[in-house]
View 1 (cartoon, rainbow, N blue to C red):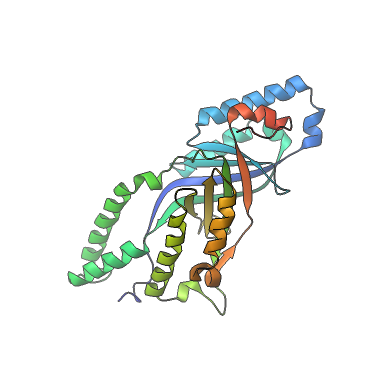
View 2: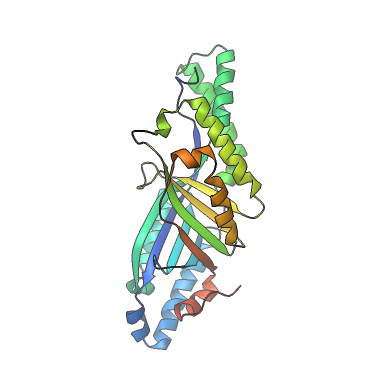
Length: 273
């Protein structure tokens, strides 16, 4: 039965938007210092009013951009409004977006799905019947309430962030979506155990983007020490689900920049601890 019921259930929460931007430094530096300060103050005020739990700015390292704006919102409409609010800033005239990413906080329920289906089978419920659907929705709602803090997280206040998108392989030789459910469940359980070993030093937020963006998931990592990103991702590369079935997109690493630090950052000063 588990193989015929092949799609694990998921829970969704906050919608997420990542915006990576490059500062047009030549144009920015030609402005009068007083004008730059006023523009930076306007931008800092908006980000501060958005709230640190909902929106954050990071100073990116490397050539892929200078700034990363991260937003979590309860609805896609609110996410769109945050994007439009930023676009109205005078600062936006001196930024060039290099990429963006739209997704939604997602909790995969492999273990819960397997237990649920087993229980329903033992109760004599027929798959896809009205009784099955009703029992499933009741259980999903119970789990949704229990996991609300994880579904609607505040942006962690850690100093460093790492973001990357990823896929599961769908190629000719290896196709994650054709692997039997119980095998995927086992691999995801082993994969999760690695992440849990780093829970005290790395906060992970997984977002789903199937139907929203070019990759299937987005991964946000937050820590006080960026070396933990390397250690965690390196160890995960050795588990089966990553070694055999994972594809990774571009990585972005940044330093948290508080609204009060934005003006200094735009004058070329790295965010202070």
